[in-house]
Image (cartoon, rainbow, N blue to C red; front, side, top):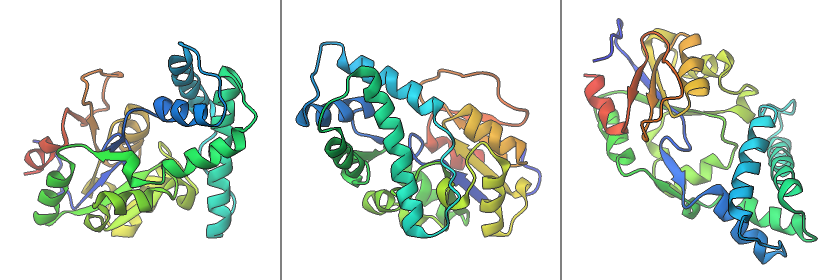
Length: 243
């Protein structure tokens, strides 16, 4: 049982790789579609794309934009991703129809059919909701998250969704956690955040004053947890922790 002090009223979740995951892998999807648009595949292409994506994603600035109009936010999100994907193929091999490829692959990740819920996601969310918990999302995903969640059938289970491009703050910044808390009118100690990243989800939430749970499905600890944080291997453990 989590030593929560005042009762937890809200449970926040990260989105991708916590509630759902991409079918296959990002690298596999990139390679599959790049070949269709003229990329010259080699036996090492998949691993090269995987490594290049990891590096490009880590080197990218946070997805925080100065614009506020919805259309311009979406344009900024798209440009942010264009830079990352261009960086990937600059490293592994550029091809003439790259722009057409990017248009296609950007749409692929907006399609809920490209994603799959983890087996216990729906039952865990339903159980928490039935117990009276308010549920929220705090994610660095872009606005494509909304159609993905609708397509996966979980959007209606959440009271709030807070994403970095709309919040103008990104995890692990305390600002995005505070904005999410304000939507529920709760204090940090009344909220729990669950995610798969030690730095963004657990350390970020803990520094903002929330209780935190690391979802470590593969039992590959990234490092020690902050004081008071817990580690689980499946979302199905959450309802028991909160009793």
